[in-house]
Image (cartoon, rainbow, N blue to C red):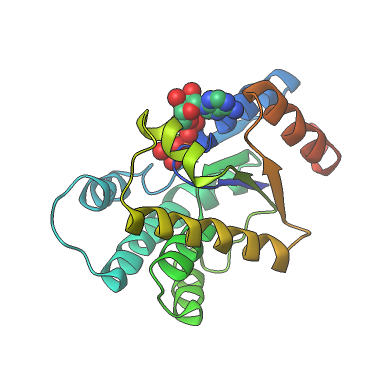
Length: 202
Ligand SMILES: Nc1ncnc2c1ncn2[C@@H]1O[C@H](COP(=O)(O)OP(=O)(O)OP(=O)(O)O)[C@@H](O)[C@H]1O
Ligand SMILES: [Mg+2]
């Protein structure tokens, strides 16, 4: 079972992914936790290129780099983990690319969808938690400050509405969680949602 965590930078994805991993392990499940982009040597190199380098990267190049990292992650880590019967948690997955490169950067959504599908080989999360917070709060949590130039703010607003649209289109898979609450409350909501969908313990 593949479970992904989505939302703006600073919304609490990593916090909740770690909490859920711990909770599932306490219940006796075998859990593997990955982050995107990353989790394989190639994908970590691409992560550094994308997130740390000052090199200008066009939106299309960005789309392809995220998906190159994803292709490597899916084939060498996610599929083997899923085949071994583990519950696989992914801190960001294909919806991030749809929200950021599609809705945020404005690349055609069908181009993004095609590229994502090639990279994942059609693998989709069974359940996705979209941790929704206002842009201001996400920025405060991730940077310790709420200052951002208008262009940046508008970009993140588009990303957030993009996530809403994804959740609206796939209500069976994507659960919109109010992540402005405390980490405990957010975790409780995630757990309530996930519990009836979990496979039986091995
Ligand atoms: N529900 C919450 N309430 C208050 N603070 C929180 C909450 N969840 C996480 N935080 C804090 O906000 C910061 C960002 O959280 P976290 O790293 O989990 O977000 P993220 O979505 O993984 O961010 P990024 O996309 O940048 O990796 C951390 O300092 C974390 O401790
Ligand atoms: Mg994180």
